[in-house]
Length: 170
Image (cartoon, rainbow, N blue to C red; front, side):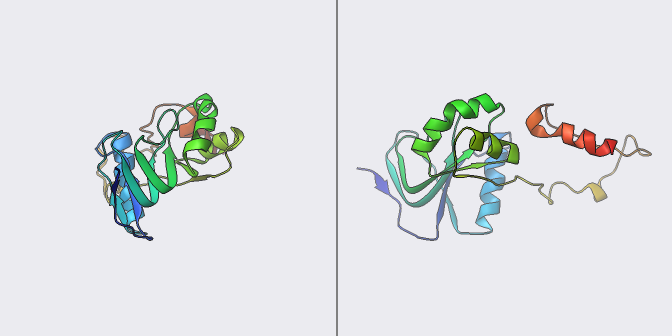
């Protein structure tokens, strides 16, 4: 029999990665931001272990856009991050079957999913953590006399470096 979490209509249940690299950073920051808006409960869950969530559940959609097996909820919200539009197009059918809503981290991702036939898609931008990123207080050791734009991301279309280059051209 599945373990039932106590019902709370205002609670958002979150099953996102934890950690200080890639998906873990995304999971930590998104969970913290959502917790400032609504009560949240971060779930510790072993894949395949039956568990019922009485409200909305936010979890990674994963590479195949399928919810974690064993987890049931009143409303499944998938958080999808992908690098290539072909991945999303292939996974759109599974996303429709497994999630009520898909959330992406970019407008590009939202557009790709809409083009793949999904209608319940929205974007939550990751934004910048002002507690960590404070350029006005940073001590510059290099290029002190130049205006510098830094991109810590790999060069690809979804990271929008092309948009930054075009903006600087203007």
